[in-house]
Every structure is written in C-alpha cells, then in structure tokens.
Image 1 (cartoon, rainbow, N blue to C red):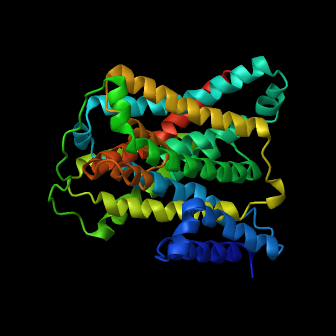
Image 2 (cartoon, rainbow, N blue to C red):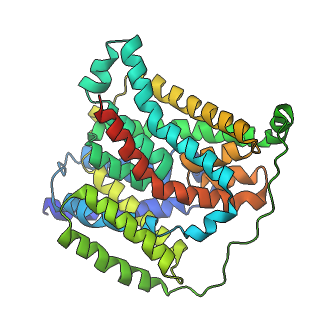
Image 3 (cartoon, helix red, strand yellow):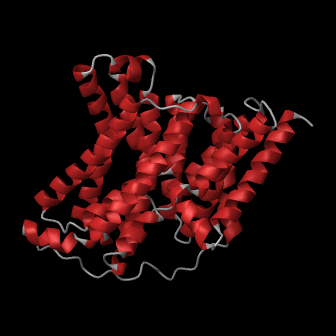
Length: 377
C-alpha cells in the first residue's frame, strides 16, 4: 500500500473517530474532553498510529492537499460566519474591552521576551537563537482565533512539529485552568462592581434569529468550493491567499442575506479536524519538550492579559462581568465563552457568541502583528 493511500486512510479514520468522540454523552467521556479536547485527539491519533507501526508519512500529497485546499476552505468558512450588523447589539464598550484583551495577547509575548532578554540575557539564545518565539505565535492564534488561526500562523511562522505539539498541550492545560477561574470570577462580578463603584448594567438581549430563510446546506459548498479552486489557481503566496480568502469570507457572510452561518461553521470545524489529523502524521513524540522559562512566560502572559482587561473595564466603568466574558471569547472560543457567561446571565450568551465569532475572524490578523513585532528583533 502506498504512503499516500496510507496517509489518506489514517487521516480519514482520525476525522471519523474525533467526530464520534466529540458527540459522546457519557459523563466520563465529557470529563476527559474537558481536559483533553477532541481536537487534540485529531493531532495525537495519527502520531500514535505512525509511531506504533513505525511509518514515515511526513512527506506526501496529503500535506499539499491540506495547505492548498483544506486550510483555505476552513478560512473561508469561518470568516463568513460574522454578520457585521449584529455587532451593534454588543455595544461599543464591551467590544473595546474585547479588543484590549486581543491587543494584550498579541503584544505581551513580544514585550515579555524583550524584558527577559534584558533581565536574563541568556534567554535571548532560547527565544531568538533557538526560535522558541515561533511557538508563541500559534498560541496567539489559538487564544484569539481558535484552531484555524493557530494552524495558519503555525505555517506562516514556520513552527516545527515537536514544538507545536508541546505548545498545544501547554495551551490546553492553561486554557482549561483559566476557564475554571473565569467561571468563579464571573459569579463574583456584582460584588467586584460594588467595591469598584461600578453601576453599569447590562440590557436584556433579544433573540438573534432574524427569521430569514437560509440557503439549503449544499449551496454553501457550491459557492465556496469554486472560490477555493480559483484561489489555488490564481494566488501563489500562502499569506496573500489567507488575507484575500478572509476578505471574501466576510463578503459572503454579509452580502448574501440567506447565508447559513451555523452550517459553514460546521464545515470549518470538520476542515480543522482534517488539518490537525494531517499534521499529526508528521509528529515525532521524541521532539516533545518545553523549557521552563517559556512555560513561566506563558503563565505571566495570561495573568497580565487579565490585569489589563480589568484596568480597561474599570476605566470604562463597565460591568466587570464583561471581563471574563471577553477573556473567554478571546481564549476559549465559541463553546466555552457562552458556557462561562451562562453562570452570570443566560441572556448574555448571544453576546458571548458574537464576541467569540469576532475572535475567530480576527485571530490571524493579531498573530501576523505578533510575527511582525518579533521580526523587529
């Protein structure tokens, strides 16, 4: 059996397994997924298979397929999921708070690496000389934009596979701890508001359902696939392909009134699982390691992100509940942000979803800013 066929079969099996695991209702399965999400299984399953079977599938047509076809489809799908007109229901101040959190995530790693170079000169060899800064860039994408941005920025930054897996594991552990903390903090929002003298309330939100009849599900693919094919034919630069497909996705989601946002997000989700499975084929477990200076830097990064958002909310006299909501929209995404929000007010869940979608479409841009700032070194 050829390596290309083996790669396809393993990737296809992995996608099916991850979709099956993610839909299980058993309590013990959910407990595992709380700490080891299904998307990480997509990366590890192919690696385990190739390791146990002693297969070398690092090269092959499927990697080109992922870069030239599946990643563009994922970008186009996710970027078409935000109707701009709905942002007005969130309000200017919460969006400003959310942006401050994104800006902190994008710039803090550069600032912290710069400070560590001054305080601990030998750290320059680690972050710059050994290129560990390339592991920080996918974290920016993963925290703000989710898996799509994380994968795109991994490619743009050139993060090597062992470092990427180690970063994924660290990222998952810290974000799960952060989610637990945000659940606790949002419950104490009213108490913190009283201490800070903040009286800003949150108006009740009406349903986002516009009642507009959506296109039938195959229509989305019929529209998107020719665009992906055209991008492959016309655009040679991967970076420009990402930028232009992002803009086209925004146009689709906002100009086509019957565009089915929930369906294209599912397409994007399955595409992301496939991308992760293909990446897993190239993984070598022996490469997994993270130096403690990098781990402490990421922890400090998270703490300062929260401090900056708290200061911003206090200056804006904004209900402190928006801090965990906006933080989870940045770090947790479309699943955990509304879950955390529901612990405070279920009526705010649509706000959290909209901020999470905004996070999904802006993550790549923030990561490109991080790459540019690191380039100044």
